Image (tube, rainbow, N blue to C red; front, top):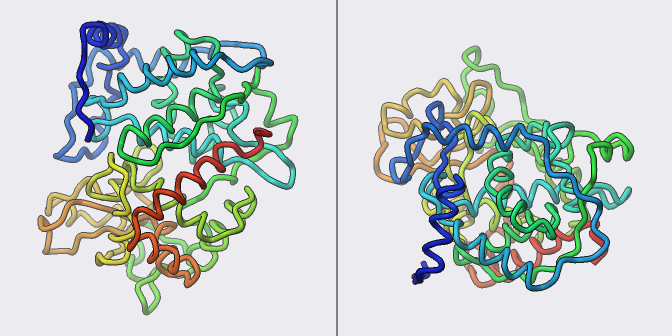
Amino acid sequence: MAIYYYNAVVQAAMLLLVSSGVMAFTPNHRSMPVSTSTATATPTKLNSYLDSLSTAAPLQFPIASVVASPEVYDAVREELKLFMDNPSWDDGSLAPIFIRLAWHSSGTYDAASGTGGSNGAGMRFNTDEAADPENAGLHVARSFLEPIKKKFAQISYSDLWILASYVGIEHTGGPVIPFTPGRTDHVNDSYWQTTGMTYGRLPAAEKYCCPHIEGQTPIGNSLDAQGRVQGWEGLCTHVRQEVFNRMGFTDDAEIVALLCGGHVYGRCHPTFSGYAGPWVEHPTQFSNEYATDMLEDDWTLIGHSDTWLDEQGSAELRPAPGNRQYVNQKRGQGGEDANQMMLISDMILAWDPSFRTHLETYAQDEAKLRVDFAKAFKKLTELGCGF
């Protein structure tokens, strides 16, 4: 990790951020499993800051006709660097949730109709896009960025969200992605209705897999002879065709690069997505760990009823009722490895022959992943922008 030298000016800026609540507030995590390696501030009086931002009406700006000056973008970039490391949030970094915000705001794009994508920042309206279950928890990222938007009104929300993800990737040792400005914001929440957009454009972790009723059938009944969830082929079709091909990603290598580079960051929360835990041991650093661990570790399918995880110090890996995921822990063998999980929609990369070919490539060559992820993520975040 880089070593940062704070002069008096930067220190003053940090104090300003702390006093305004940006650096110090913590959403209420009492109902969430928390990694023992995570530095977490006490969620008390500053919770109201997040609540006020997430419920307040977003700032209203006309659709931008002129891109902000380069000086503004440079200033925003420096501001983002000041609070990217934040001990009050997951694993001490805001980078993962900014990356998820950028991904989900971009991932609605449909190449056939030209609708969706990072233009618009429609998620800031607490209606259609924000209410998509796949976007649960992203109000946290938007709230963290709101003070910067208020300070630099010239930059659109759409540009800010994408720039924050680029800075986050770079700050955590990932590739430097050239930023192209010029995205515009919707002035109201009518876009979804007027374009006929619906939910379902973002990937779902268990779509088309055989159903599982918590507590009524053994979770092992969901598996085929190779330990794969039955119906995984349908889920693979969903990820490849209904999500990525729909956006314009027709090369499996691009799809795998995006998932390997994106899911090396952050963790899932039962109260947001319904799933639980980090994908990798070091979820705030860019690496090819996601690919290597998926291929090299042994993975066990578990559900909410698998309370043996709690007894072995792996409570943070137990998903919400009704959800299933794979974990790197075995009953009676806890404590040897860091707690990690994979969604079923992750595991298809190891099960599908074409996906697996690229997964193996990135597991062996982190430098190639770095290059390919940068290209694919830039493409993702510019879909529909007309650059």
